[in-house]
Length: 117
Image 1 (cartoon, rainbow, N blue to C red):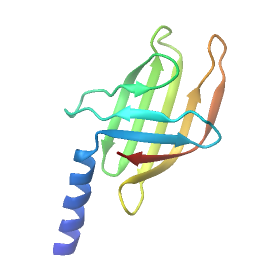
Image 2 (cartoon, helix red, strand yellow):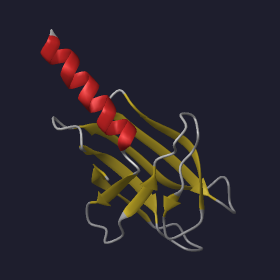
Image 3 (cartoon, rainbow, N blue to C red):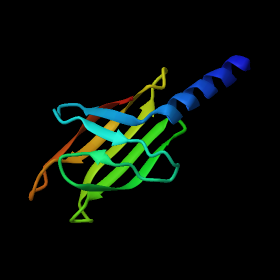
Image 4 (cartoon, rainbow, N blue to C red):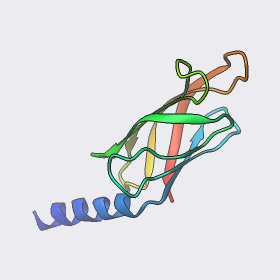
């Protein structure tokens, strides 16, 4: 029981200390950097080729969920990331969908690997 509690506390501490999350979408050269907000409920800034507004961000219970929309065209989704923590809790694996197109939609999707920094 003590071992389980220790593991839970260590993983919680690791998550709370993370300042950013660096995600590498498969098949895409662009790395995506997510600045973890200090306060729960705040939305993060994202390093993405186009200006975006994060509308959903959840980083708890060993899950990462992020949804960001285009800053100008609020109906245009730019980025979705859904990933789950691996055994060491510093890597998250999951799926992504991103629109890297300018005026035209250019969708990429597939596996994503995210690391806590």
